[in-house]
Amino acid sequence: MTTGNVFIDARIATLAEGAAPYGLIEDAALAVEGDRIAWVGPRDALPARYAHFERLSLQGRLVTPGLIDCHTHLIFAGDRAREFEMRLNGAGYQAIARAGGGISTTVRATRASDLERLIEQALPRVDALIAEGITTLEIKSGYGLDIETEIRMLRAARRIGQLRPVRVVTTFLGAHSVPEEYAGRSDAYIDGVAIPALRAAHDQGCQSAFKVDPPSASNFDPPFRAEQARRCEVFL
Image (cartoon, rainbow, N blue to C red; front, top):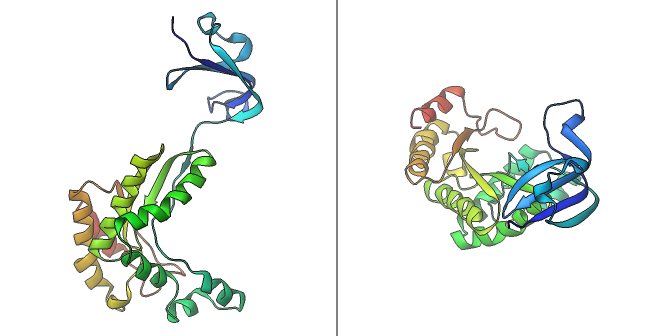
């Protein structure tokens, strides 16, 4: 006889199409066999085949499908604590960057960290998201801005998916910003770093997508152009 659990005393958002917002079932039951959801629906419609399953009360809690965090920068080293004080004193992003802060601060610390250190620092951030219901997590690179560190960040992200019960989708963001050593030479950076790093990430199977940051208040040295993004696309 197959055994499992039936969760009762729950409100369940199925996201099924229908009259109720979010496919919400107010007095719901959810049957689990092994590691799979076998059935979900109104409690009074629970099929007889699950009648012998152990029943567990959720005490009125709301159950939803696993949440997706589609935009994170979880892999990085260092912090920007000093910049909070600067912002409180009125400094804008560009002024902070000119003082050596902003993305450059994180790039320097991330380049100095090995793979294991990046993973070690990222795990508490991932654990916090899992505790909030995240089951699928997008993680970007973008704080290396050189070939070696960009690949290391993506490898760390993929490793997170092996160490924790969460699906990880990785994004190559080698064109997050122009690093200090390429200031004023964004074309040289795209051709000499971003494209080779993207090609390496693709060849090593450690990226699922790529992104080029568009012009913005934070990406001013200088912003990447659409034409530069298209140059990256041809290598996918």
